[in-house]
Amino acid sequence: MRKGALLLSLALPACALDLSQTLKAVEDRYNRANTLQVAFSEEFSGQGKGRRVESGTLSLRKPGRMRWDYTSPAGKLFLVDGKHVYLYSPGTHRVQRTKVKESGDMHAPLAFLLGKLDFQRDFRKFTHRPEGADTWIVAEPKSENTPYSQVEFAVTPQYQIRRVRVTGYDRAVLDFSFEQERVNPRLDDRIFQFEMPAGAQLEEAIE
Image 1 (cartoon, rainbow, N blue to C red):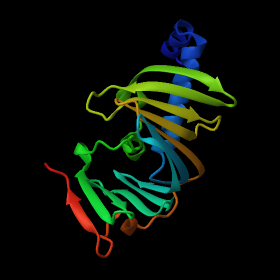
Image 2: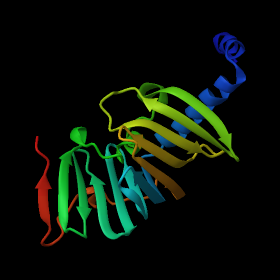
Image 3: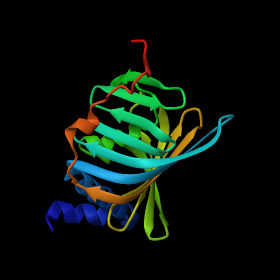
Image 4: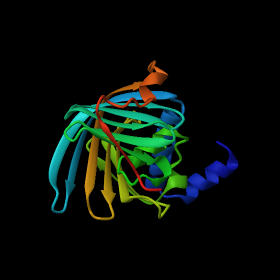
């Protein structure tokens, strides 16, 4: 161990070292990946909005592309192509399109996996606690231009992100659970190109 690192390890309490090491290991795991695919379940709850549970498959490709294919409700699609965010709701047969930088959707925190993951750059006020074999990490975003006030991560002993809970400024909560993670699967670029469903109505965000 280098002298500087040794002095730092002596100066920091063990819990701070454990958290720092865990965050670094998670960053290393995901920053090596160019593509990622997981099965997801998401639960939304908000004041006066009830509770909604949905599920499907999430595919990601760097830089800046993600695709949420829903099996429940069947046909729902949330797609980010690097420039725009598309949300297709089969119940209304409408497509909402928004520029990525203007999107207020609470799926947005997952976008950190699409770039260079850096917890210290993006978040602040870290706390953590054990939850079974996992580590539960709570943090606040550094930027004030986010649709959420807090993000929580459940990290496995293998440094896999198993769960992400996002709390909005309106106290709405979006809770994601992930399983069957595949790192660097072969993903066709075409799945990140949005195609309008036949007869669907496009709604553009006001810019």
